[in-house]
Length: 531
Image (cartoon, one colour):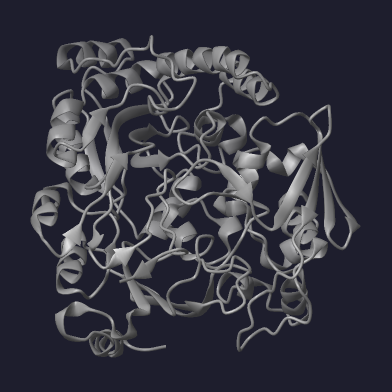
C-alpha cells in the first residue's frame, strides 16, 4: 500500500488541466472517516456501509437508487406464504463473485451463499462464527437472529426462509446493507486456512466494484467489476475513497478537482459552494435525527427526573442556529416527521433552566453532578459539528450545576465503546435505513438492541411489547396506533433527547452525472459517470 505522500502524487498525476480526470474514468470520493472493516454484517454506520455494502456487495432484494422502493437483487423473484411466515426466493443465475489476487471463485453465486450469509446471524455455533468471534448487531437489533427459524436450500437456485412470527418489514430488512450476501466458498477457504477474519479485511462480493487496497485514514481503492450482472450500471473504471476527516479540507479538495464528490459538508460552506460555477449542490429533506443519548445504567441517569432536567436545560434552538445554520429543524419524537406513524400530538420540552433545577432537586441532586459527554469525531448529516454541539450542551448544563467532561475517540472506537456502555451521555444520531418505523423504534430503543444501537441501554417492557406486536401486523393503520403509543412512553421516559433533523446537501463537481442522494444517507456510485 502506498504512503500518504505516494497517494498524493498518484492523485496529482490522475488529473489533467482544469481538474478533469484523465480519460474521465476514475472517480474520487472525499469520504469523512475510515471504515472499521469491510464485512458489512458486523457494522451499523454509514461510513462502514459506503465502503462495503454500497460498493462490494449485493443483497437478495435492494432499494432502487435514490428510493425507498424495493427492486429485485440477487433474488429474481420471491413468494410469500398466505400466513406471512415463509419466503421463497428464486435466485439469479450467472452472477459471478469477484476474482482477486487472494480469491478465485470456482463457481457462480448460488443458494449455498444465501444459506451461509443468513446462518451467520441465526447460528452462534456456526464454525465460521466461532472462528471470527464476530457479532452481528444490526441483525440482532432487527430481531432477525431469533425470528428466522429455518433457512433451507431447496435447490441450487431456490432458498426458503421460515419466520417464527410475521415481520411486516422483512423484505425491507433484507434490502439493508447488513444483509449483504457473502461467498460461502471464500468463507470455507478462509476457515480451512485459519484466516476467517480475513473476510473483514479482504472482502469478496458480487457488487459493482472490486476491493483493491486500503490504508487506514488515507485511501480505499476499488476497480470496476468487469462481470457485474447489472449491465451498464458501472460507468467508471476506478473508484477511490480519499479519507479526509476535516470537512474544510474536503471542500478545498472538491474546489481543486482533487475529488469529484465530498461527504458531509459544513453548513457554513454551503452558500459558497452553491455560488461556485464548477460545483452543484443538490439537496433533499433528511430522513434523520441527531440526539443526546443517556446511558440509563449509569447513576444518576437511571432517574427519569434527571434525564428530563438535562433535556430542559439544553437550548436546542441555539444549537440548531449555530450547528445546523439554517439546515436543521427541531426534533420532538424518536423519528422524523416524514416517517409514517409519527405521533403529531407530542410536544417538545421548552428550554427552562429554572424548571430543570427544580427537577434535579426533586431527584435529590440540588447541587448537580459530574458527567461525561461524548462528542462524535466525524460530521454526519444528523450532526454536522458534534464538537460545537457538545461545547454548547456543556455550557447549558453548567447552568444547572452539571459539570460535563467532553470525551471523544476515533469513530470506530467511539461506536465500539458506546456499545459496551462506557459513556454517560453521548451525541449520536440515525438516518433511517428502510422506511419502516421499526427501523427507528426497534433499532434504537428495543430491548433486543441494548447490545447494539440502543446506546441508552433502555429496556421498557411496555414500550417493547408495543413495538414487537406492531412488527407482526400487516395493517399500517393498526401498526400506527401501536407506534404512537410507544412514542408516548418514550416521551415520558426520555432515554434520549431528540435535538434536530437536518436537510441533506450533496456537493459535487459539475462533471458528475447520475449520482442520486440516498434517503438512507448512503453514498452509492453504480450508475455514476463523469462527463
